[in-house]
Image (cartoon, rainbow, N blue to C red; front, side, top):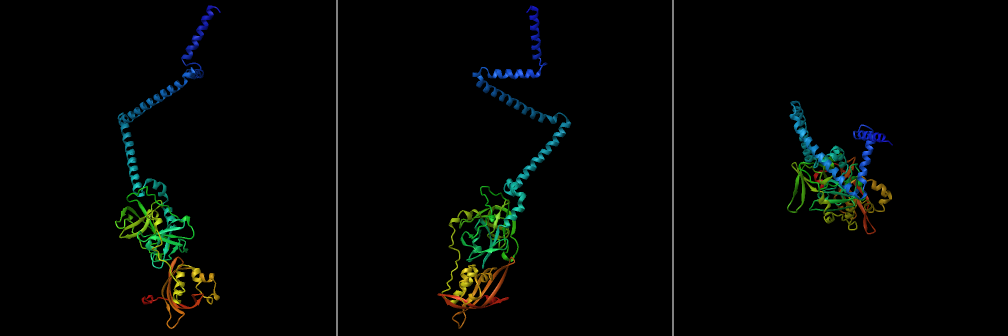
Length: 440
């Protein structure tokens, strides 16, 4: 190669180098070469690669953070200086600022309202939209508790356990549980605590769909938080579904002797609602309806039922004690006591062989299918007779979801069979509109 050709080749290489350096020619080639050079510097020599990787990472992270801080302060400066750049900018800033302040204060007020009226703002978003549906579900989970001496309400805390007040079942050995659909059953067992005014009624069957949730006391109730008391106001005198009274939580109270706790609200409870549930907006049970006077009501906290549950007993529960072998009049009393407790087998077994010629268990028990309660007023031997008993009693019947009262008097002839006095022949008539003295 001649000297002239060599110089031309050098000149061509220099031109190519200048084009590459000026980014005018072949941008894709340039990018590729840059990336290639970058990885070449990063990977070679290999023993320095880990150090380079850490160093580059820290470098680019710091570079990003510095740019972020600078951009942040630049944005703040632009935000602050924007209103002062011109009068038009100032008007825009004032208008936008007023809207933001309004939104902020509205948010604060709404959050305060939700916290005050729903206990916690999450309750509103989880339960507030379904308040009506929740209340309907609670209504369908409350039952009537009806006895011969008192009436009240109750609710399921377990599939086979109903909580109520003790005074609702006091002196009542066999109260009836009436469901919202009008059907009724007799309890299997009752336990409670008279001093705490709490009782738990056990049922033979389970009703898991009627069990209400229990309020989580870890989330404290707020003052003025809405609460709902559900129960059968005025007992069986008022027909239809359960009544719901709304009010607000005030505070929790404690008595000194004995040291029991109560939830105080603005709800004015009505007779017949005792034993029903006090629930929050989510349908969780807070307490048990207990007492109400002049717009102020007290409720036993639900945990007072659950916590000492194992200490409840049937010691204060009235027992059915009858002995039909003692005398004819005691046999007649036992017969109607079994009807009251709906112990139909035991009552049927007190019918004599003569009486059973004309009936069977199914036909006989169907006569009393709607009897809620039987109250024996008088059971005594008829004068001048050894085996005939004069009986006077009243019944409380559940007909068409209403209570009907009936009164009867007459005689039962008895016969001694297998060491037990049994009923053989009746002469009973219904008494309409008995006067005051008839009951004594």
